[in-house]
Length: 59
Image (cartoon, rainbow, N blue to C red; front, side, top):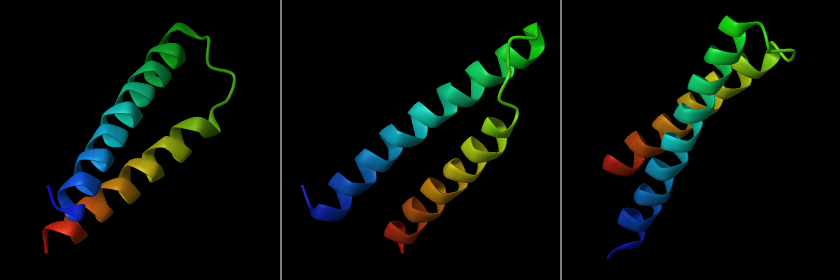
């Protein structure tokens, strides 16, 4: 396995983790349990960063 493939797999795992976190934040917001509204923005930006890195590896 090349370094890029390993790196890409790690990034995809991180993306999955961030997506789960984003879903949990969304559920918390709908039920009124979310006290840290800024977390949505942070997670959304982290997802964008990871996706950008994955796309850069493809090239």
